[in-house]
Image 1 (tube, rainbow, N blue to C red):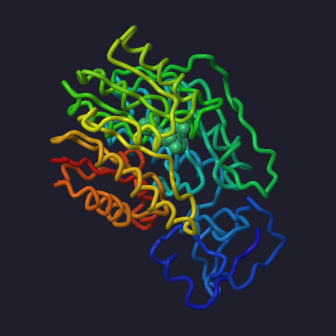
Image 2: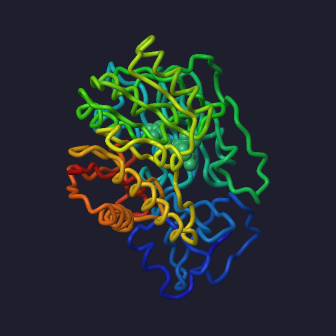
Length: 394
Ligand code: SAH
């Protein structure tokens, strides 16, 4: 095993259990280290401080354990996955009759940096975001089968878009265990086709579940625009909530197909729903004022990296400004950002700037975030990525 030695004073964040070692903190590496290896991390005083996966990049080590006695073996994976499962049971999401869709492992939030596992009925979809997790995918899959016992039959591995490009790891998508054509999952009593083969993330945005449930409570009698609808999650909840009309918009024709399918799966021939493949900015420019009394804006991560932060903030400001310009008096705006690089205050400032430009009176009704099955490790505040505001626009 290779050893990583820190520069003097660079152990402070690790002492506070922050799970990343940045390249700038490292003074030297002993041994022949390869990407994805498990390495030991030592302070400049040569004391053990952490053990984790090594990777070339600005985050060089993702910490798996701070306990010198804990080795990374089959028992380790089982133990961590069991802890994650117990957390979902404590939350009350893992054993509901009306719901079989939830996140079982959320990276750092479950002390497993680089690993995401979503459960869709009897299939788990596993995603590696680091070379280390990729190399250990079979051990993890075996441990997952043990921990989930008779609750899942299949594990689908989807890492094509999440692994670092340069590592040339032979990224792959496919079943590691089992194989199933059944791809309908249930979320709070609603059905969704999950396209884990081609869909974004693990096929569905599990992280908006609680926010969709809140939207449902605001839907009755309203004309709703679900902008950036993707698989139509918000639209389906709005229809169940008694909306008078729901318009779903996404620039991707494939997303519009998925949305139509999901609406049909729950409400066959529902004349209240319409879906359009259109660019968001163009659509909002072309509609009449006062057409909608509820608008949802859930755009893609405008900033994937810090260096494009300025553009991202401008993107949020522009799209929200258009919504403020067009929404009816007494309207409700659900507005989100899922960019990790944009923090809560920056997002709020963008929305504030857009509101101010419209000159309208705006109040904050709810401040939203990711649900409990996407937990934030208290020592890793960067894990809080989803931000949302529900606004009342006079
Ligand atoms: N609200 C969705 C998730 C949205 S993901 C849910 O709850 O599941 C972001 C979506 O925005 C993607 O489907 C993408 O196709 C779409 N998109 C990206 N750029 C767009 C643009 N300029 N106009 C409209 N849609 C866009």
